[in-house]
Image (tube, rainbow, N blue to C red; front, side, top):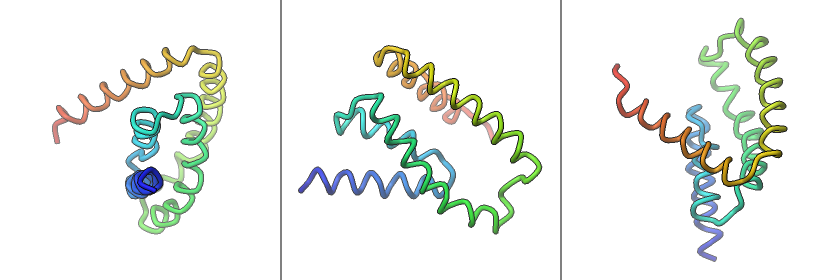
Length: 119
């Protein structure tokens, strides 16, 4: 019972962050791999599926409030699709330990950037 409750709380917390556009999926990956014992490759797939409905529910509010730069949509979507396809292909070819280390390094860099960011 407690495992289900913790998973639900993690989903709720990352859903709130996704609504803000803060990358709740990254935190979901941390929860799944560090606390729930989900293998990295499986957690990445779950995260991709998680992102679709959470983004779809947050997007109308961002459009309504003018937080979407419409001129940037097509180039961002196009490059995002190409890069995500290439990176997903590369990720499936990499060893899981390499993925874990790359993800950890990414989180450290982002965390340090946010910690020391001015303004």
